[in-house]
Length: 304
Ligand SMILES: Nc1nc2c(ncn2[C@@H]2O[C@H](COP(=O)(O)OP(=O)(O)OP(=O)(O)O)[C@@H](O)[C@H]2O)c(=O)[nH]1
Ligand SMILES: [Mg+2]
View 1 (cartoon, helix red, strand yellow):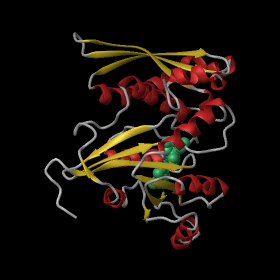
View 2 (cartoon, helix red, strand yellow):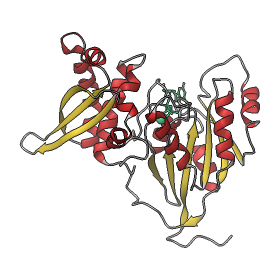
View 3 (tube, helix red, strand yellow):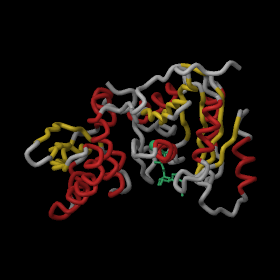
View 4 (cartoon, protein in one colour):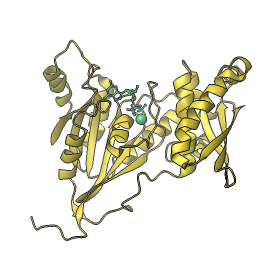
């Protein structure tokens, strides 16, 4: 192979696909070295495709995070799956991300078939290697490896940072030589308003249970900066599907929404680099998850 010219680096796109909760977004953040994707213990946390750009001296790896593939129950679920599968259509490397703590199931087989049909190299990634399990790791690897024909298999823990660099080295090897696709200092392709909305939604996910996390959509209504006190005012609307859900989020004497606001501000301030005043309102938008135009308005799935 001829040596790279100064402008040429290993560059290309690497998609992470897998079942909900496998640890895709946690891996994206570990690779980026900063928070670009939201993470929670609730399935279907990620609702749109997003790119994190990992730039080094001799490579630019664009990691594509996707919504977890699952059996859809509504228009939102269908849109999330569509967006994840579309991400596979034109990447240099397709990674099947499996939670090593869970038995391999029918859902994984279904995802694996889509990965097999992708054009690029195929990498199997077993995450959560830090979690102790009665089944030895060799058997867990063997069960996952039977899902397809993989160019490489990587075992890692995004939470502990174990073998995250190893993963990056493996996928980089599969990328062609070429120009960088993005500016070198760009961490993600997500617009600021999307990140603000997602960071707020993460805090709602972390503080709610049962059906509520899935019923929540967040929109940013206004962002304005005031130099005098170096403060950005963010007006965010948390939408739910029912009055009862609204009450639960707001909580007794507004405690719930207050806590969400405090936690969200902690993430928004480093993102904006200013103090933040967060005006958080909760509104009902009945059955929005069945309304394709509303799903698009939130920017979920393929977005606007
Ligand atoms: N112990 C451990 N937990 C992890 C690891 N990676 C992710 N998790 C946890 O697994 C849960 C799901 O992580 P996410 O990164 O949101 O999973 P995801 O695959 O992006 O999920 P969706 O967006 O719903 O498809 C969270 O509670 C994470 O903290 C890991 O390496 N070790
Ligand atoms: Mg995710």
